[in-house]
Amino acid sequence: MNDQKKYTEMTVGLGERSYPILAGPNLLDLIGEHAKEMGLLSPIAIITDSNVKSLYAERVLQSLENSGFTARILDFPAGESSKHLQTVSALYDGMVSLGPERKSGVIALGGGVPGDIAGFVAATYLRGMRFIQVPTTLLAQVDSAVGGKVGVDHAGGKNLIGAFHQPCRVTIDTRTLQTLDRRQIKAGLAEIIKHGVIADEALFQRICDILDRLLAVDDAIYQEIIPWNCRIKANVVEQDEKESGLRAILNFGHTIGHALETLTGYEHYLHGEAVAIGMLVEAQLGERLGITPLAVVEALASLLRKADYPLEKPDISADRLLDSMFRDKKVERGRLRFIFPAKMGDVTIQDVEDLDLIRDTWDQYMQP
Image (cartoon, rainbow, N blue to C red; front, side, top):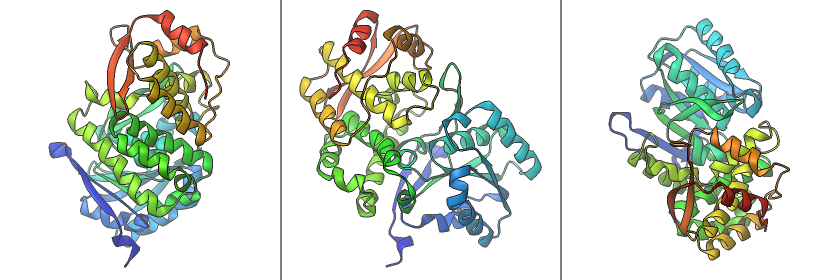
């Protein structure tokens, strides 16, 4: 069988903003066909970072040209440190030079940073253009490429500047995972673990059972696991597109995780590494509040330990952590909002007003 036929397809159902997700091997070669199916017009901008440019940009460009499109690669330096408005401004300059029309398109090629930046450019240039998410990292494939949250960081906090702008398609080539190092795989795996904790006990157990194959980047396993996670994310987004309620459950581990990223200048932790610590601390806080069963905390800690995440507490005071958390966009009416597991596969959203309890939980953080 042709590899290009071995894919899973699903739909994010959002009425007129609905879009398909395709996941499988060697789908990069079909980007041109997908752009044509979406009715995009030339010229098309391929927005990516310097690392992904050298790996996949020419292949995507060739696919577009083979389908009759004029396209150009616009890139920026790789890394979270590029995720700011100066990068967006430079990309606007490239877009002006390229001269796309509103019915032209943007290809967001790469991990979470290129996806967020390219999506933000698409949301704002010409007051909104269609774009295709082509995620090449595990974290982007199972999380950030689905759902339409796009934006950039600010010195005051992560993703403070952004928009909701849904892609017209998500194309996931599972073979791109072969070029990731183990640290990047684990960064994405943290979001997969999160999905299991918040929404699907069977997924959490499956991760425990096949952890070695996940870390070894077994393509057959990821052809199962990536669509599974996309369905979980899509189901939440369909019910709450703009995070007015239910979608907040996807922030488990992120209230503290984002603060850790911000306070370390976005250079010490990969996003999934910060989320791993965040999940463990927030689960421990939930246990202190009588919400999260100790068995859930222990199961999560055991899995994170087996996956060998860097779980040591950084040299950050509780007061600095709180100050950063209060600058986060998830604060509501001046209260910190957390997601706590009530049992494996089910969570509750709760504001926490007892700042001393948060301080005490951080000070006594128990790494596994």
